Each structure stands twice: as structure tokens, then as C-alpha cells.
Length: 162
Image 1 (cartoon, helix red, strand yellow):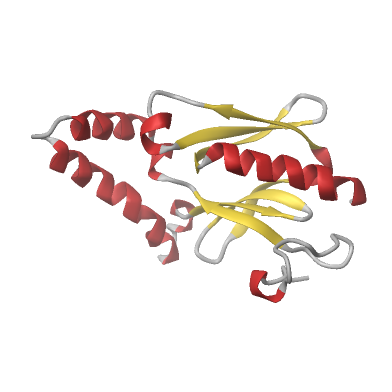
Image 2: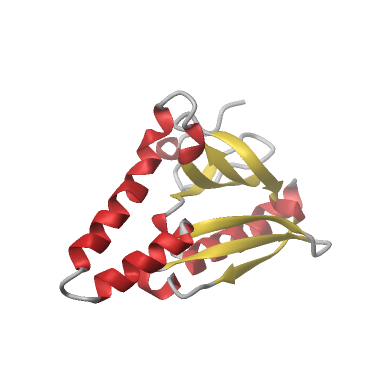
């Protein structure tokens, strides 16, 4: 069954999970998922003279997300999708789930920061199952605290109905 379109919902994600799967929020993996290159770019941008080199270093990493439509390069486009049924890591321009966890199995979501987190306003989110094991890690999530809260609130709102 296809996902409900956001523009067909009165309030985003307010569709009972028993009736239809509806997208609540979706974010793209940022360039900050490429740690060493981002550290070098951050240091270059911090200087006035070498800042253009830092931006040039970032450009191909930012643009790689749009190469996912080419055959064999679908792994370059990564999206993190939260629905009223599950949390997924999806890859490709026609996204397919590569990792997922139902909302009722999510225990905790932890934010893992590094030296680049403040500069790029990103972090990694570690999703844990109720038994404490790690389901997966989402790298380079923009506005991580906001996305974390959306996951936890969706789990609390929709998880008991699954």
C-alpha cells in the first residue's frame, strides 16, 4: 500500500496507522556524514584566505546526493523518513528502505556529536530498540534534536496502536 501524501492530510501524519502509512517527516543526510572531509573544510573555512578552498571541498560532497538517479549510484542519495508506522533509512532517487524499525520497537534515540556538530548544525542519531541493542545509526542528521523529538513523540503517539 502506498504512503499517504503530505498534501492530502489535514494535519501531517494524522492518519491512523491501521488505515494507511503516512509520512510525518523526512530529512536528507547532510555533507557532515563525511567526517574527515568536513573537518578539513571547517578548518579551511575558519581562515579568511583559505575559505574558498573549503567551500570547493564541500561542493562535490553536497552535490553527490543528486547523483543517485544514475544507474549504480543510488547509494549516494540517503533520506531519513519517519512515518506513523516506522522509522527508515531510504536510499536512491526512487527511495527504497535499507534499514527500518517499527515505532513500537524504538526504545531510545541518542544524539552523538563530534567536533563538527556545532559548525554544521548536525549530529548522528543512534536508534536503540527497547532491549537496548542498536537498531541503526543515522549519520549527518540536520537539526538532530528536532528530529529526535519527532521520533520520540511519534513513538509515544502511534507506537501503542501498532
